[in-house]
Length: 110
Image: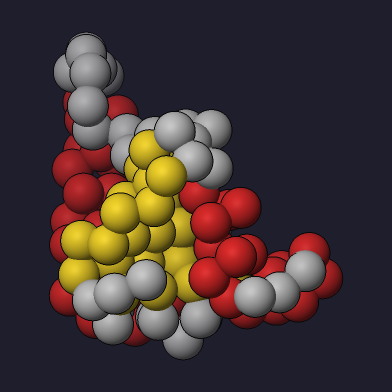
């Protein structure tokens, strides 16, 4: 599994399609994105990470950098998203950070 993360609108999906060498239809079957949103409805992050790691590519948008929300639920969701990212990175063969459309391997090789 390739775990790809980076800021919103940084080109993560385009990089994933390139790394998987696939078009839109195949990409939708082989990849999952916006996984940071799943922590709002799921409490067992370990189980969620196992499920997500079955995809060829898992994409998360960084949400932890910036202003800390006043709302406790929002702070907790950010914390769970960060923990999920750690679990996914641990399971991934390759971890890629995308910034301004430029992929950088953090773990493994492109």
